Image (tube, rainbow over all chains, first blue to last red; front, side):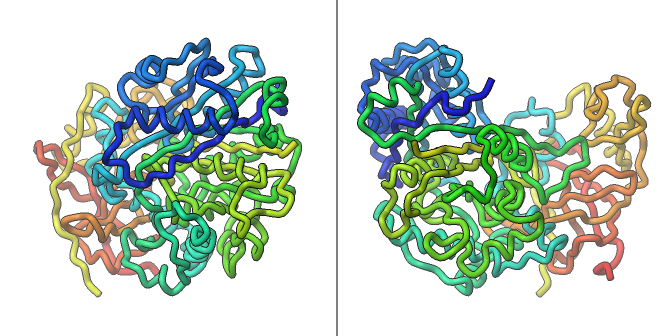
Length: 388
Length: 138
C-alpha cells in the first residue's frame, strides 16, 4: 500500500512572530493551528487527527489536544528533532489512507530566542540515554557536531568554505523579499567567509538564525480537499530514516537522506531532475550541501560545485531552494526547521510564494528535513508533493 | 596562530552496570572496547548486546590506545575556552567521539596519529581523550 495521492496538504500557516516574549508556548501552538485551519477553510471541529513532537508543552498530545479543545480519533507524537513534522505529514497520510482520520493537524512552536538559547551550548538528553557517558563530557553542541561533517567533507572531496558560503548567499537573495525574515540583507561570499569562526570550519553566517514562533499544516482526504477553495497540493511520496553512529562505523559525510530520499522518489514515481523547487533543511550551510548530494540532485562530493555561482537562487540556478529565506535567513522556530520547509513548498505549489522568487508553473516540489545531529544520530524525512 | 588547549570542566558520566567496567579501566589508565565473539567485531560505545549482530557474547578488550583523527572541529565561540570535539579512529577499527587535548588546536589535522590520555570529570571519573603524537600528517 502506498500513500501516493491519498492525502492533500490543505492548510499551511507560518507564525509571523520571531520573538514572542508576550505569548505562552501553548498559545503559539493554538495560534498556528487556527492560522492553518483558516487557510484551509476548516474549523477545529473538523480535526480528528493530531500530531505534535517534543516542542509541545506538558505531556505532548495529552496536554495539547485537551488545551486546543480537539476531539480526535488518531494521534502521534513521533520525535526525530527538526524533521519530526515531515514524518508527521507522512504518518498523517498513512492514517488518512487507512481511514483512521479525515483531517489531520500538525503543529510546531517554540521560544528559543526569548529564552537565550544558542547553538554553541553543549547538549544533553538525560543520564539514561545509552550514549550519555560516552558523549556528554566532550561538549557536543550543535555547531561543532555539524562542523565535523563539514571538515571531513572538505578533506574527502575538496569542498571549500566559499562553496558553502554560496548556500547562505542564495538564502539571503530570497530573504530580501520576505518582510518577516530575520536577516533581509543580501550577503556576499566574502562576507560569509570573513564572518567570525564559530566552530571550525563553520562561520557565524554559515549558521541559521535562532527564532521564536511556529507553524502548522493540515492534511485531508481527497474528497474533503476537493470541496475546499484552495489550490490542491497532493502528497505523492514520503520516506524516513534514522542514521546513527553505527556501533563505531560512523561516516559523517552522508545523511539519512541517502535512504529517505530514494524511498520518497520511488513512491512518487519521479526522479530528482523532475523536481522544480526544493525546501532543504538548512540548520547550517553544510546540512544543505550533504542532503542535496544524498537526495541525488548531484553526485556525492560534487555538492560544492552544484551550489556555487548561484546554483540555488530562484530564477538563476539549477534548483531554487528555500525561497522564504529558510532557516539561514528567515526563521527556525524552536530550532526545528522541518515545519517551515513544508510550508514554503506548499506556497510554491499553490503559486503563493513571493513573486520575485516564485517558480513559474511549479508542479512538483520536495521538502527535506534533518533532525538531531549531522555527525551524530539524526532523523531524516523526505516529502514529495504535486500541484493537482 | 597558536591556540593551546586548556583543560575544562567535564560533565560527569552517568555510569551504569553495563558500563562500569569501562570506567574502572579508565581509572587505571586503560581504554577498553567491547568485542563480539559471535561476529568477531568491535563496537563502541560499549553495550551488553552487540549492535552489529545482536549477540550477547560480548567481552571487554583492552585497546592499544592509539589511532588517528577521523574528523574534528574547534569550537571558538560561546565557550569559556576553545576546545576540539573529534572522532578518532582507533587502530582496532571503531571511531569514537572524543576531545583532542594537550596540543595546539590550530595545528590539528585529519589523519594525524594520536594516543589516549585521561582527564577527570567533575565527579572524578576519568574520561578518555586523545593527543597528537607527532605533527601534521604528510
